[in-house]
Length: 464
Length: 100
Image (cartoon, helix red, strand yellow):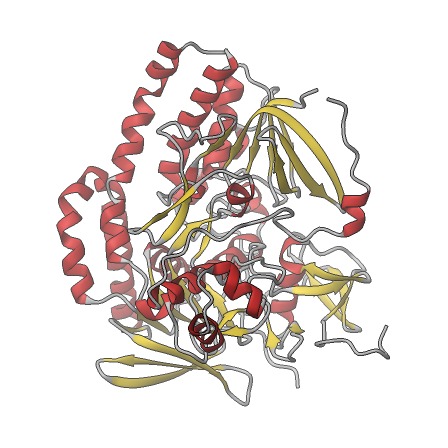
C-alpha cells in the first residue's frame, strides 16, 4: 500500500517547487519537514512574518517572495507533515519518520530528498564557548522571533555573511565589526570566473549591492570596523561572560570584546539522509563538500531515490527551485503522468534557468573558499563538539595508524555524539587530507537523528 | 552570576515558562532555545566534561542546545516551541550515581 505517489523530504525551495510541480501534473505528494512551517531556512517563518514583534521587513523582497511558494502548497494533491523528522529510508520506497514522539512508516513509488544545506563548521580554539554562534543561527533568531544581536562581530566569509550584515544594519543591530577571511589574492584568482558569472548578472549585482551597502553604513554610522584577509581566529571567555575574539590582520594580532561572535564560512549539502539511504556520493573539490551522485534530472543510481536543491549541490534558492521542478517533471514522467517529450518540453525553461543560475557558482565558490585553518584547525581546537575531541587527538590517532573516518572514530568517539558527525566530519576529513589520506565519504546510519528506543519498539509495520 | 542576554531586549512576552525554577516570559513562536538566549547569556547546558555551551546552529544540526523539557532529557530546544507552563532545566554535566 502506498501513502502517496511521491514522498518529498524537506519543504525548502527545492521541496516546495517539486511538490507543486508534481501535484499540478496530477501526482499525489506527501511532504515532510522538521520545522512547524514550510519555507526551509531561507524562507524560514515567512508565512508568519506579519505577526512578528517588530513587524518590519529587513530581510528584503527576495525573502518575502518565499510566501507565494508556501501558499502554493495548499493543493488537493499535497499532504504535509510538519514537525516530522525522517530518520530512515528503506528500499528506496519507505520512509520512517518521527513526530511528537511517535514513529511511523510511509511508502511511495518515488522519494525526493530535498534536505537542503547546513553551515560549514568553522572550528577554531574557543568556538564552543557560550556567545559563539553561526551567523545563520542569528539570522534564524531574527526571522522567527525578532531577536536582534547586540554589538555582535561577524567573522568569516561567504555571500550569506554579507547578506546577514546588511539585514543586521537594516534591523538597527549593526555588527560592531566585520572580520573577513577573504584575501585579495583569492579575489584575483576568482576573477577569471567573472565572465561566466555574468550569465547570472542579477545575482552578481545583488551581491555587489550588499557590499556597497556595508560600505555606506560604515561611512555613515562610522561604527562598523572592517578587517579583511584575517586569520588565526581564537575566542576566549572574559570574566563578564563576553567573548574576547582575537585574530591576525596585517601581521598584527587584534583583540575585540563582544557579547556575540557570529561566524560563517559558506554552506554545505546536508547529506546524512542521502548517505544513509545507500546512494553513492562524491567529493566536490570546488565546493569542498560531499554530494550525492545523480543524473541531470536529480535521479540517483537507485531509480526511486531523487535529490534536488542544495542537498544535491550548493546553488542557492533560485537554482534549487529550478532543480526541484526539473526533478518533479522527471518523476511524474516515470509515474506515467507525462510522456518523455512532454517532460522535455516543460523542462526547457527551467533547464536554462538552472544552468544560468549555476554559472555564478565557480566565482562564488572560489571567491569564498574556506580558509585552510578551518579545514584543518590548530591542535587545541575542539573538532567534535559533542564528544569534545580535539584536533591534536585526531592527529595523534592518524599518526598511530587510523587511516579513515571510521578508524579515527573507533579510537576517539568523534562523530558518535547526538549530531552524528554533522559538526565534525568535514574537519576530520580536512585533517586526514592534511596527513596524506584521501578518505571516502563517512558512513551515515539509521536513525540519522537520535530517536528514543521506545519509538522504534512501538513502530507498526504497515501491510504491503 | 546572571550574564546579560547577548541579544537586544524585546517587549515582555505573555507565555511563561520555568527555567531552572525561574519564571521567564517568551513570545508565541519562540523556540525554547530562543527563550533561553533572550533570557540570559549564560550557558544553557554543561557537557560531560563540564564545559559551558549555548545554542549554536538554531536549525537542529548541532545538538548543542540540548536541555530537559517537562522531565524529558536531551531535547533539542531549538526545534521545540515554547508552551505556557513548560518546565525547562539546563543539563549540568555528567550525572553521578546519587542523582536521579
